[in-house]
Length: 107
Length: 120
Image (tube, rainbow over all chains, first blue to last red):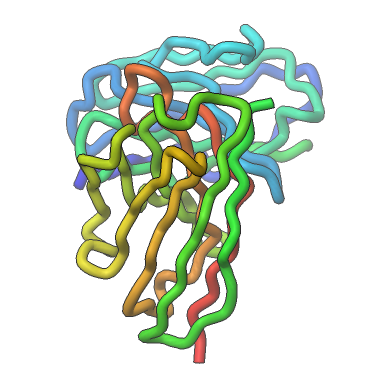
């Protein structure tokens, strides 16, 4: 199976900050990468797919980059709603694995 | 409003069975491939199973293969997961999730989940 590793596991930031989360794949996944966020008690929400494509309705403050094995999610101008757990996911190959998550906390 | 609502979770003993349901509304259910994705308490996400629009193709994670069966009833706008021979490690919140059009295994709509607890 392809292993997905996110860093950092926890990230502290303030409202208005810009932050970056990294996701590394154990082998090349081309650009077959998605990003989701999840707040406690709610369903995950798709933010980005194909590494850089913004899902419909998602604000442009979210951006993705990367290909191959290294990917990043950047969130600009943090608002209270953005403090959540973020997951990357590869859909290049079975078993469509997720990263362990990055918890974005208010500093 | 596009919505997925899961039901059927509960407490079951190891070796027992449970059937989960997912009711879809607000979109043409029969046009979308569907999945189950689970999340163990305090843990990350794990894809469990996939079913194609007509039900002719189904796939499973190795961890559930041979024990779980995914199915759907397009006339009832419903997705199901039959879970047999349940293990303690199957304890999780089970979400149904819709595939993004043209992108298998990218999940653009999720339900809030139904909790399955396997314990004696």
